[in-house]
Image (cartoon, rainbow, N blue to C red):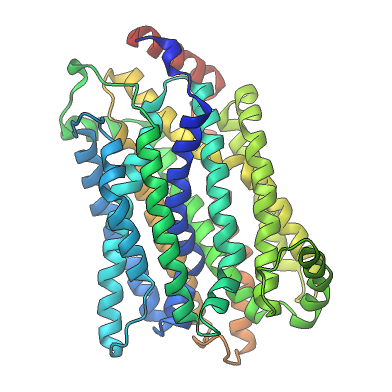
Length: 478
């Protein structure tokens, strides 16, 4: 193999990153609004929403992902193993994303059945698209610096998707629907489906698979699974991924409740008014007039902008100190700023915004590293076993992602139900229900992050081993 051919052009890095931007228009919507959509827009009871999200999510995690991973690793086409999946699923994923956030006029039982069917299909197609997409990062290049660079491009794109969904989407939904959120979210999802489909097609046409396993590296599903469960770094990364996405889903899905029910509206209005006036003067008028929606959007905007700053610094730190050490330190510091939310009163708006910004910066450093570390685990498996099974390793990580998303989102609805939250954004909530929204953005989501930091002490792929694996694999492939 010509090792210089593993250098990636800026066009290919951008093209690859657009695939994650498209996928995250769906994923960030699920993480931020799924529980809120089912309880406050679609009209399900909190306990029914919790059961639906958890049960369908676990089926997707433990059934859809392993099957897709095993099939993708054995796909043979003129386009490679993983790229064709991006092509085949681009349009169906956009269509089902729209249907999953539609609100047909069925009976309550009919709504539950419709939600189960559409959410199941959405997670199936998301697995069939995003799992091969993620595995593609492990075969585009074997150069770890190029892989770190590509991850940085990829997750800047993720932040743009997150920025739109968490900052502008709620005000746009309210505006597009003329106050009717059900109509508004259908209109917004229609545009997101079209845009996401086009981006996925760009990813397919601009990327190339360079690492092709030799015939003697072929293995059975049984051998692949045996390699997985003997791979300690893989087990650690699977658990870490699950914990990270439990936190992300829990706090991400709780912020909208937190702003609607806990943060003092009068103090929030006085704080954001000068900011909105300044933005209006420079032509930014996407936040609407509702102080809760505007405050929620600005709060997310601050965190995401500083996440992007963290992402841009991630490669520099990882190249110098190694992914594992940088990930652990940054994750620990970001957790401190989550815990601080517990101590803030409802009028401490400035501190609430400041903590979100600082949390965003330090968590942003970890974002490209998670998936780059998973690609390193695939390299570690090939280095150790002389067989490469990229997709099944990434499918296991997608299990962690789906389990984390399902458990975290289900916990939001379940905990709100325990604390007697009334599923209506205009309802008067009890003090107990209001306090639950505070716990859901502070103490509860901090715990999985702290467990993740502890796990990294047992992850042995440090900077020195990264260099050795890369050097040995280049020699073999040459």
